[in-house]
Length: 362
Image (tube, rainbow, N blue to C red; front, side, top):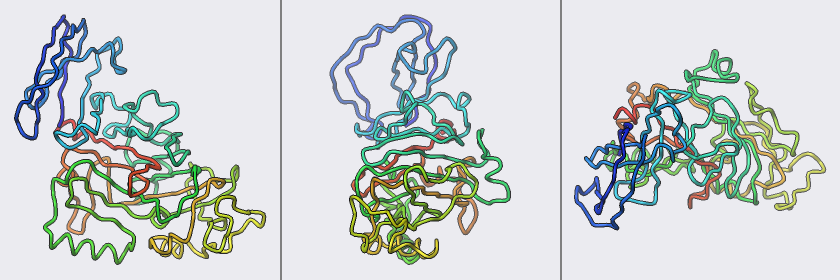
């Protein structure tokens, strides 16, 4: 649900004893409240006709100049577990038409509020309950910094994510997935027969893929270690520069079944007994959950994952299909895309939402 806002320059007293559900269009009683709102307050007009008021001076977006605030609900209608996100109007977005936010379980170092936009083209330090590191996000044709222009030259790629850091505990490589996890049902859901065919086809290509398109919280995720185009495993202090244009593949330190020191790996020989001879072999083996369960992430090594594709164009908000490009709003509705890595039970390695200005326009 999208909320449109404007500033109101007078004292207003707000009284309410109702809560409106956009899904049921019914009214239910709640605790009444009364609050005096001062000068420069923010009046919010919701699309269900309810008027709300928030003090602009108490908002982190409030300043001497008027900044329009858009309140986006990223959860299912009627649910309270997903918090609303405050967004500045797209004209204030530093990387318009893209606005990237950290989800509550991902703490970005140096970012004061989770609602604040994350930079594109600059490494971002972050930490979760199982991982501490950095992420570099590059998106073609945004207001970029760093070496983004050079990175996309002579490449069809539309986006690149580089994740680098250390796990806080030993975990099997079969536990960490990467992909998209959504809080709402898809707007365009394939019929059951088509859904079964899609699952069967994708599982042949990616044995470990989890493809749920029909539930209330759909997801398409696959094992991170098998999905990454490049994976480098290094001693602390010897990891590659994550901003370099061509990242290396190096798995000589990978910890596998034959390496007996799972929690305190002996790296004196600078080589694992199960290092992969090629990138393609690593992707083939570690895409399969059974195989990946024989390998581990360990805390005393630095992991660098590079992921990119030419399928999803976040700037135009389109997805390349066999029949042509499709606007992703037709599939996702008003909810943002995601950058998620973590376990199936939602222990996040990282978790970000990617808004497009069409979410505001719609």
